Every structure is written in structure tokens, then in C-alpha cells.
Image (cartoon, rainbow, N blue to C red; front, side):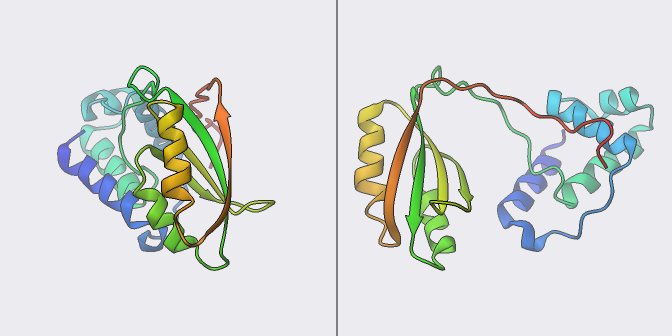
Length: 175
């Protein structure tokens, strides 16, 4: 992938969905391109074009459109957190002050090790996945950083003992 394509993809992902055009339907070639890039985000335009039987110009235009439309939100490496020195993982549930989601989300994004943040329904409001070097670091993160956020009413920490990355890919018949 060209550096400017990846940069545009990252910029789009950081802006949020409110800046995205309405979604367009994906055809079979678009879905094939997505499957290839999900398997190998470093695949060259030539390789992608050859595998989906289109010209390089067509593959390039399609990938750019998928980036511009926000379908492709970026290109990334899949990391083994334990091997990268982040051996403790936890899901942390938070109850927050009503209408404080955007403020809380900004503060959670700034936390070291925050990997995923979701506004959810049910018994709690936010689900946060974090990776830290060890349980002591996790404890400090929860007790001194997260619980210090004024809009956070309560937390519950669920330690992750083992993870399996399902690596979901777009299905051949999805539209």
C-alpha cells in the first residue's frame, strides 16, 4: 500500500463516522479485495489486481474508494500482547454519568494500554479492553486513573486468562 493511502485511511478512522459518506453497496470484487487485505494488509496493488482479475488502475481506484468511504479504516499489525510485554489483559466495565460518553471516551482513549472502548447497553455503560505489563500496572490503571475520572461512577474489572483472536473476515455473500 502506498504511504498516502495508509495515512488517509488512518486519518479517516480517527475522524469518526460523522465525517463519512453514506455507505455504498459492495460488489463481489470489493469483497474479494477486502478479504485479501484482511489476510495481508501489505499486499501490493499489483498482487491484489492479479488476484481479483482487474487492472492495477481499477484495483487502486477501488481501494482508494474503500478507504475514502470508511470501509477500510486503516492498516495494522496484529500483536501478541503477552510477547510484546503486555501480559495482563482485562475488560473493565464502567457506569458513567448520563450524557458524559464523549468526555469519558476522550479520557479513556488517552489511557496507556486502552485497546477497545464501546458504549453498550445493559447493567453498565462502557466496556473497555486494556493491556498492561502486569497486574500491578492494571491495578494502578483502574484505581488511580480510571476511577479518578469524575464522570465514572463505578468500575468492575474482569481479568482475561486466555484470548482467541477470531480474525473475522467479510463473508463471500455479504453485501
